[in-house]
Image 1: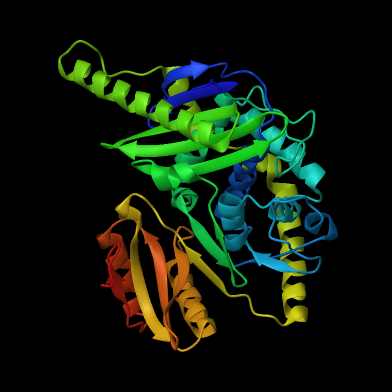
Image 2: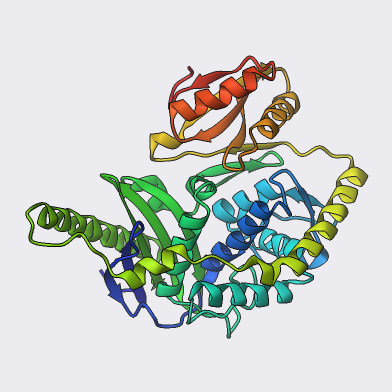
Length: 394
């Protein structure tokens, strides 16, 4: 198996790096760039400047982006939730610019903001020049920096982390499936992001959990999708084996259960939102106003059928709200129910039962208890809901 340009495998809980190769070498990050675009989007959501169902406007510049994209048109709108899923599943470049322009006056301003955020997080080798990862000679990062960003995302936004396990989603009647085949093929895989650019080759960030330990593998600059995926899976295999030996040594008293405190430190880095607040707050207000006007002018309802398929069954618990004769009614009822739960981690799911019936569900609950608690809340609001088990109907 040929070696990629750069790689590492690390423990997510501690940040300890088990294996590394050229991890500080600056290389084009390709669509791994979108993790920072999502990080800043999550920050805006948690600040309350955006909401998951907020409609964002599509500009001519956003619509002009090269594939991969959703083929958005100037004057379209897209919800924040769909935009996030489009970046995770489809790696849509047009949607990356939509988010950039919702958070900053221009994509250039947003890329400067991304670079500032990277510096705050300790990403010493990283400079961003766009929101998507399309080639720019000065846009560079490293496996180490991408590990820092991924760890910070998981640590600071655990409520959004399950979204990275989404394997498919449907936007305006068209289904999009993930490019992340490690997610579908590797035991315990949970996410995270893939990328490709001709200047470096194939990149991937993967997270996986086995025996209550979560690892992070990164490969930058491999020769094909297959070689990249095989290499990151081999990295994860070796990491889990090292975890097993380490745990055994600790149990036998031959090793202290301690990790490098420097690596641990990157886990708790957070942005100083005061640096970004004036621009982001003002721009999101403008974007939401423009998006609302565009949506009203078009008069076209947007129905989104999202499906979060996760290897770990803990994330597959759902609540069924009801069954309806149109997808519009199913989608509307689920969205209304979602507003009472006030948790952006949960997703709307409309599922076709037969030719006349659409199920209306909320999904993304880690445990049966969480789903039941949410159902109890909805029952107090006069929803006749029930809990749906993973791979089951009730």
